[in-house]
Length: 527
Image (cartoon, rainbow, N blue to C red):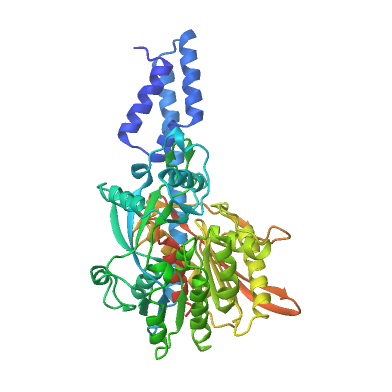
């Protein structure tokens, strides 16, 4: 019997795939190398007729390749398991001995999740992707979505057209895969803090039905409303195709038509509570809901002054954390740089938000889209610059606080700065916990599943773009920490820097709320 080489390749590929010998082998068989080899064999069959002996040898070769790839995959899995154990050891080493009091403002909503490819249909009418400060038409939505989707960048935009928004929400809910959860930065952070064992108070106005969905261990102040604010969370996965665009990473695009959250309608009730309640940590979040909201002239500034007073009225024993978000309106971001950021001890943000804040404070403009997978050296340099700029600015502002902590959470790693000897403790463990929480949240699991995990961080990284030291990743001690001295005017400030790799979830179940969960988890061990 004669088996031609081209036929032989097809038979081997079919049988090995059917037997599921090894997923790595299957990838190898479908690789460009094997494709080229198949073409070569097909050419050879035109001039030669070697028979079964060559076929047997070729089969043996393929099996040897399978063994090699299986061994390689086993080694990789062992590395990942070692890294996970290293992170979990740090997380478990520091457990809370008491229940810290955490007060969180502001707001809550219902998040309605939908797959982007279900809800949004691409057509040639979309044309060139474009940024809009607010969304008024369906075409603007499609153009704006394309603008962020092609970069894999998270975004959150106000939709002034309530009729369009309600129609989109109704359409989203009609899909079987759509689902709803408790949403809003403050509420999601409150849920995480409560899950970690904190005594939590949330400032929010909500309907009775939504109130019943929130765990009773969370104290809510603010009162009731007739209609809950809704956020439409349009999600996509890494590699999703939408028209001519492919997503660089899993992420989400959010639109809202909020009526309560932009006005911080729970602010006064929260203020009253804080007169007699002294938390260990006050978290300020959700202020991006003000972005491009049509306030009467001067109303937003009045609200920000009230938030500022709420911060400055706290005693030094209460730590204050401000959680950044997606801002498209430069005027609001500059107002936050003047009225909110100087009065916080700690800041939390993702890779898009640090680029935006860095540009606002250093260059005087905003960055709508940044690299969704920035190098560690780039982010650390941005953190150093921001730390210096904010500390110098705070010196000129009455009742301001000295910034002592910055946490940046990215897809591939966590980076935390803390001032040595400051109120923040356990920085290494906090980075580890934040890293593990990133995977658990996105994969919607309580543990890290190696089969759904990928390490995309390099084997080593530089600490700075200019004259940086190269640090190798040690999988047995995966969190790298070191001290640096930053010169701020005439004063030397010693900071501890910790970087932890993230085991990226390769089968994302949810993307919204990731930053809120990660920031909260990092803070828990540092309060």
